Length: 139
Image: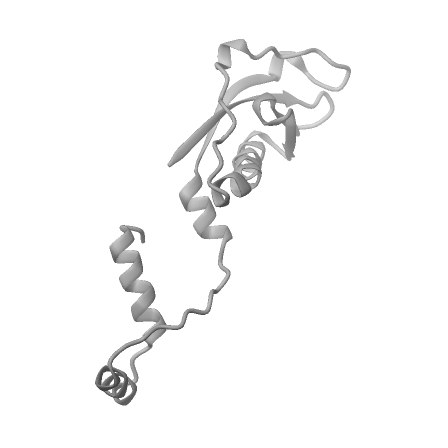
């Protein structure tokens, strides 16, 4: 599922750096060494911010209309080089990349399958993972 939030990219007056502010995410902010890095950091910020919402199956904060965002002048930013942009991520992919924890599961199978699997050197854990991924339509 792709989620998108509007952000304000404030260009630093004295460098190539950008500060990225997300009004819909409690005015949370991140920064990057340049525009490309700032966008990447902004995507990571959204993923980090929404991770607990995703795991706890809570509703994500609502996304504002980008037209309603105001670029506010301050002493550190080059307002003419600052801009608004939508930043999106695939939250399912983000969670898959971030959550690599292993959970032990106990299961029951017929003894003949266990014996045959052991004799042929099957990796039961991998087979179960592959089967679950296939059933859940995830890669």
